[in-house]
Length: 312
Ligand code: HEC
Ligand SMILES: [Cu+2]
Figure 1: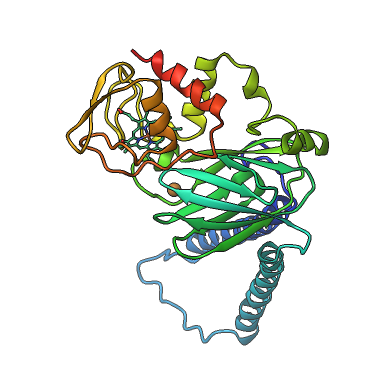
Figure 2: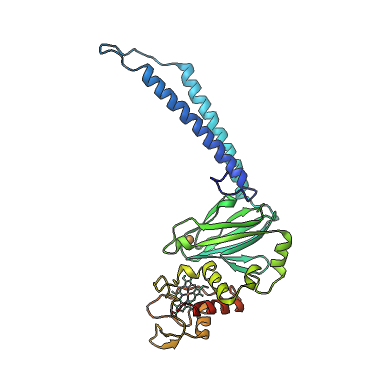
């Protein structure tokens, strides 16, 4: 079936089951009621001008049938839905914890093993995961369609969600709660790795941000980071101003700062802007850029700088 997302977690087929039963029942009743409506409208229409309406007192058996049967169906639906809901709300005791922070407009993930990633979540196949989630600013909603899990993320309070990924692959993460200008680019990916690949991710390569990226030429890696780590939510590359200044032509130019001083945008300035965004605020902008310290490795910061240099 292509009209629903892939089934990629233990919960997905259960949620689909509930949805399927509700849809089929609704369809049956829709067809039944519509058919009776049409038949009765034709059969009992007024055929002659002087036809009198018969006097009908009602039927007890009929009333009992159409009260009892729907009641039983609805209670059964509730119980079925509640059983699945209860399972979705209660993570198993052996689940691994990952903390999710939503902020305008990216997701950061802090793992039980001390790792930290941005917009890209890494999980191991068949290992249950408990996500503990909070927002830095406004309401967001963490949504993985392939896993059939969705949870509003609130500022000032932890909420949780759990799933066991069952299928190796890459699946979308969406923000499903309108959270401002960059809402539509608040996108992430969840990478479900085989136990072997997960082990490499966990213990293997320095920088720890995944495998494939390490071999790209710097400017291309920089472009990938620009798109995948959420810089594009706030920085354009075509000269237009979003939340932050455009990257177009910034390298080598003189930047005016909020305190009135001027700096030349060289490698060190760009690096500092990424790792310590509050150190120098560009004139006319709010100090809202999150720090990427501990999120981007040195190699990745260098790659971003190489990419920005290409944007003349
Ligand atoms: C939430 C929005 C936001 C995100 C996400 C963001 N930035 Fe920024 N950035 C800003 C704002 C606002 C400024 C201007 C204020 C300041 O200097 O801190 C800025 C300034 C900068 C500057 C200085 C630009 C200049 O014209 O002098 C650089 C370089 C930069 N950001 C790089 C990045 C990179 C690289 C990323 C992604 C890894 C990123 N930013 C992600 C909002 C953001
Ligand atoms: Cu959001």
